[in-house]
Image (cartoon, rainbow, N blue to C red; front, side, top):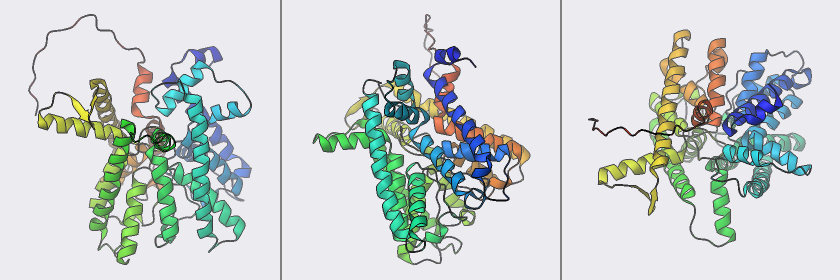
Amino acid sequence: MSFNYLKKLSPSRKLIVGFFLAIILGSILLMMPFSLNDGQHISFLTSLFTITSAVCVTGLSVIDVSQVLSTYGQIVLLIFIQLGGLGVMTFSSLIFLMIGKKISYHERELLKEERNAESNGEIISFIKGLVATVFIIESIGAFFLTLEFMKEFPLEKAIYYGIFHSISAFCNAGFALFSNNLENYAHNFGINMTISYLIIIGGIGFSVINSVLMAVRKNVKRFTLTSKVGILISIILTFGGTILFMLLEYNNPGTIGHMGFFDKLLASFFQSVTTRTAGFNTVPMGNLTKGSIFMFCILMFIGACPGSTGGGIKTTTLGVMMFYVAGVVKGRENIEIFNRRIDWEILNRALAILVISIMYISIIIMLMMMVEHFKFEEIVFEVISAFGTVGLSLGITAKLSIFSKILIIITMFIGRLGPLTFALALGENKIKENVKYPKENILVG
């Protein structure tokens, strides 16, 4: 693939190539002897799966990261988690800015595509502010996590654990340095709330964070419509998920049934937050009731806000469709959200994302059911978790066949970049309609 050919690629295709090359590089590094503990060996597929999960900030893993990877290997993993959280183009642009290189127009277009921004006019100043904000947020999280880990580990190890889990949480990656994730800390209020705070801010989206910061700095009372819808849907899903999880699991001894009321509430809140796109867990996922599994699938499918470190169809996509349905019921001619009218093209985009996502997930589930012997809900949960870049599993990830692992790798990749990005990459040019056909009604419903 020549450099001139790459320059001719559209922003969507360049973005795909950028993530792909980062994954290949990370896979090679993770296979190196310095990345593995003594006596450990991993195949290229295992390395590819792990790095794809890191770059796509998912958290699904076929190995025990805490046992297989050395400290250097864990640092390699962490670097690619941060790279995936910020975005490949954002990360590389940061390096260019540090060495004094100017960002070209085409690179600005790529950044706009990756950040899901409306224009590339102020993208560089936005990137600088984004990186500074990320550093501050992750540093605060690392500080409080270190204080908690110091109660159990030596200072040096506590600091390392604090930094690793802070970055992993903010990037919504879900990788933990414990064999059972965070199940040992189900009763630890400090760790639960700090991780939750990082997940929520990372999943709310950089554009929303920027909107809030601008409102605070300039004393502006009006947020952008994206921020309003993203925050509203996030609040509804988070607290709605907390209540439903507590009701569904209240008497389940395998999850929260044995806990006191406060710990049940804490665990329910944490699971509701992490299910949206993070992948951490403080209760055994394999012991969930079928009702909770179904609810988790819905939350994972919806995911986080646009322009964030999370996946899924996005909260604003759901919000647009909800307001549209409400408008249809009320007999309105336009889509109205917070006294603003939405262009029909946005609804078309939202519907396209929903339909493409459902079709893709359905195909992958059917393909995996042809070769796997696991229960239906286990496969559905695994696929939606990969697509939503969540990283939760009912315990089947490491037992998947080679074919299914490849499907999950592809699903994580598509889920991180967005199904519409791939659809646009396949057909970038809009078709100009020179002929308009006569209208005719069709019965629906």
